[in-house]
Amino acid sequence: MSYLNNQTGYREELLSTRSIIKKENYVLLEPDGLVKNSIPGYEDCDVTILASPAMGASFVDYLITVKENGKNLRGIGGDGIEVFLYVIEGDVTVWNAEQKVTLGSEGYFYSPESKKICFENASGAPAKVFLYKRKYAKLDDFEAPVTITGNAKELPWIPYEDMQNCFIKDFLPAAGNFSFDMNMHILKFNLGASHGYIETHIQEHGMYFLEGKAMYRVDDEWIPMKKGDYLFLDAYCPQACYGVGRDEDLIYIYSKDCNRDAEL
Image (cartoon, rainbow, N blue to C red; front, side, top):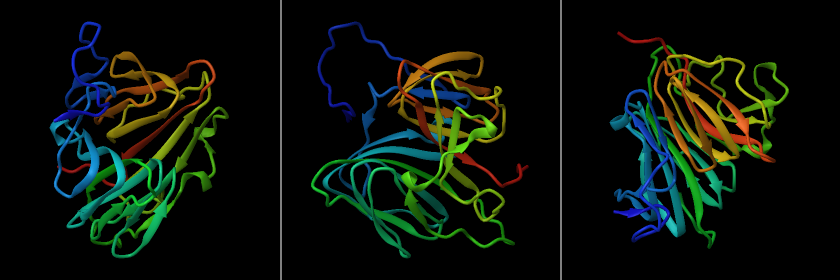
């Protein structure tokens, strides 16, 4: 086991952390202290498991540094597991049985539950990837979703709930399409922007903060967050945030399950 930030040995200050672990409620993970996980199939990759069923999530989120010539040819997903990959920085070639594409920064690849996804970095420089996988909730009277690829730079910013200083991008055509049981989004808050209300809902979220700073209301606390932080919110955890700071918008990518009834 080693640390994601590659810092070893003693610190100058007393040991401390901003991370907060409240399983089956919410979990905040700051970058410092995150460890690398050894997982079969990942070659020349630094892999950190962020969210998992061990904390109460119904999905798994990963942060992956794909080094030069790094790859996973064993495959991820398939056999009932859907996968979404987002490139934070760098270039990665990604494929399944349907498509093969080279994704640059902000590129994404959704692979349905019947098809494993593989990737390789032949760019000559490291890349950073955010990866999500989840057991697909199949409905017999709807066709399974198909592979979807693209780049967030080509998607328009849409005002979030008609607010003119908060914007969203939807990666998947899940709205009104019951083939999909999840979606992945990016939210952007200008300085001082916020949610319109404190949300409370059955859906879970996994959030990775790409830019900026926030004061996030989680359960009954207001918590400062910033670029590089990860936040898991369980079902019915009250949530909302303000974009704060001096000169940078708050931007984060997050998942949300959708389009399914609650099961007994």
